[in-house]
Length: 505
Image 1 (cartoon, rainbow, N blue to C red):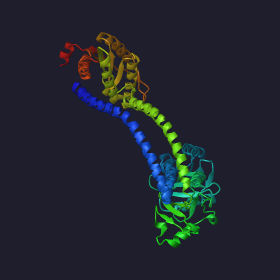
Image 2 (cartoon, rainbow, N blue to C red):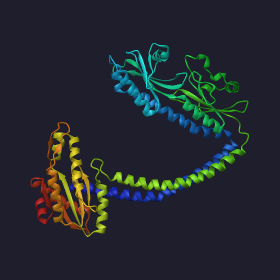
Image 3 (cartoon, rainbow, N blue to C red):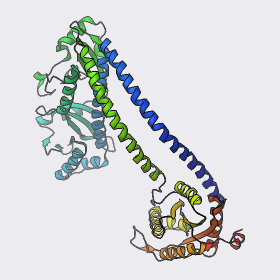
């Protein structure tokens, strides 16, 4: 027991010293990194602005970056939710039942919809029924669900479709298959395209360009100037194809390269329009950005000066908030890093730190090692969950009886440690005996059977003057006393003496 504790303690002490050094460096580097970041951002903004003035192509590219990030984030989330629903065992098992409760299924869809701010739906082949989180109900052979038979026959497991022509939504449809791989229906989510339209219009007003989203069939599904409400298989006359747009016809006329096969390229039309495109691979779509010529470049300087002043003020406020946040989160991180997750007591790292502080401010220290008797048998007999409950209850008993200057923590496994500064071994023995008897009287519940059992703890107590002593010295002595308590029949508390040491050997 002693060698194991000493070896582990040495390794932990080395880790703790490294952590303290890193913590000290953290304070010094944060301010430097922040000011370097701010300076870099300002200089980058300045030279980027000059490039914008000299090269309008770069202005378009810098403008579409946040736009593309928005699209990617808003598309990946519903894709993941739809995929989760299609692989949910609850959905799969429910779809195979002979009889379903519509209210129960609708309640599930409402929870998904409320959690992710989307419309959730399910279509069950066996029951010829489609339900969604808005309470709508349709038969699969009706005109309202023409998409079902169309997508069912297509290869693949996941589809992106636009439906609901009155309130256009982007649907993410996933096939549901049972454990045998047989098709049993569809499930998925839908997001309101009006949300995208508002965001796209904001970018269009700000940067002066138009956006066009084109599917794999070169049909425009959405645009910033709302030339098309939606693509609907019931409203073929409303479809607008990419080839119908004048700027696209100009590109086809002046560029030998097939732009339909190109990605992330920039073209210029005869009218001076700058056309760039970016793929949206998740949907098998492309996004076209149409920008007018930059004929009044002096306006960019006005924008830059205004933005720079605003940025400077925000940077100062941000720096003050950052200092406060860093201080707060660092204290939280340190506390979490030095707290045992199960018992919420300080862990080994925190005990080392407190020991080093105690020996600097006190003349005498009493260290107590506590070990739960026959803990392996508790785990083997009642299970590890019950064992965890035992650890938590005993940890609570230990922590209730200490002063503010004392320390009680989990040393490892079923072992706990107490640091009692300016406390004699006899005083510590009185405290320990009270704790030991309280624990022995506790009926530990067994959650699985409703019955209970008792457990005991053995204690080893060591008192030494702190001068020229390390935590290793205390642990070795307390460990010998604990060893003797175990040999004496367990449920004992033993004070370390020279006699204890000779008996332990």
